[in-house]
Length: 623
Image 1 (tube, rainbow, N blue to C red):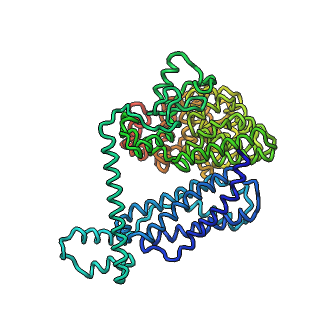
Image 2 (tube, one colour):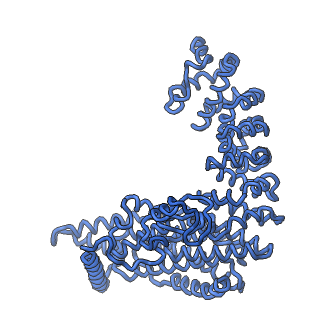
Image 3 (spheres, rainbow, N blue to C red):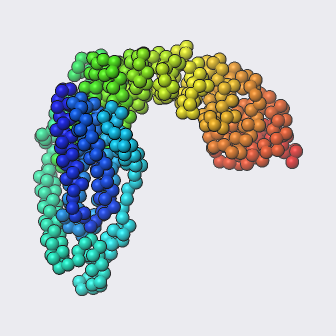
């Protein structure tokens, strides 16, 4: 399979360059969608330069993820060409009426280009610095591009629709000329050609509607048990029926929920298809397959109720499914083949090949829940866990970052923990070979600790919490924030609060509160507010440098979340030593107005009980 990927790369590049040049050489641009077409042409010209440089490098061993990216770009550019030709050669007036749909189509194309470039391993390709910078700029711009609908086209479209609704001979000729001129219709010959194109469009629409009616008529009277040529991949391996609610089990295989649930409920703990013992019984919805089943049912005019008992739920499922490079089965299969090949390199390759493979998985797992699921199904997780112990800094960094990206998919959290990853992740967190590796290890712990049971398992590792506290001291702003967020999650479990205090987190967190450059004020406050609820945490907070003046400033200038946690801390300190806290508050002239203002505020008022606070009573008498 690997050799076939590489053999295809040269022909793929040739096809891409030929296709891109065809699009770029369109001589006469359409008179509608002018801005969307021109900006798309500029993007394709930049991509063409990339394709040409890759081809000139004569590298027969293109990384599989780059082949996947190029395949996706070929699919997008082919559809761009078709849409542009439709705008150019079709009816201009019909295109004007369809302006919003066409604009949205171009917006979708740009987003698909951005998603494809997400997995392009530029650093592994032989391209010039200039091309690399151009592609990186194109990628950034494509990711944040917004839908553009030409307001002039909308205005002209509305005028045209008004004219069409007018009674015969009851419209202004000059207005008609203006509308026609706006879409490039200026001569009698233009008018004749446009009439011919409009007639073609009418026939096309009529044929489409006739086919729809014929399909609907043919389906009337069919029972739900009527035979359909259901694709094998849409059939449940147990019941062999069309899957209504496909789910993934721990082995990575997909079944219809009702069938596999019945299998498990009758005492079976293995995968029916592979015979593999299931390490957990969770059933993970296969949104991508469910979307494809839904689409197939629509195309074959099968009532959607046969695929789902809830049409609205099905609609939401389809919306969730569009979370990867392409919703088509071809794209999913392409990702699967790429993932399997790259995982093979992890298992069998040299150190250099393993480093490259880990980097490609890191990129592939960066975008899309389906990509993360497919990579895990290909067996990547155990190999990545092993590579955390690599002596090569980049290999270790790529492996821990790939695991971080994979952990965003909840079922992968279970698989990562089952692979015994915590020890290796904590080792990287504590003494990783690069700061980026350490910080991404902290982010991975934060992600894994989203599941309650894992808070206990992670905290049970003797060095996990001390290593996070160490990163609070030594990391960059991003690393400190990741460490603080991980501690916030872990400290929801009481035993972890004691370990966090014992690791010396309290004075460090207070120090970070006073450091404007640290940039983690809210996260540090969140951890302190949690530690306050255990006696050791309260004692450590009291022993540290005075907090009250700082908390008062945060009440005035902090974020909403920061104000809540500041009040939590003040309330805890007041309950333990109310007179002393009251004295400090009254000394500070800014405190009472801030507290009284917050006491009447919506969310904060729920946390602020006047009857409990002696210092607030004292403040009343002072006034």
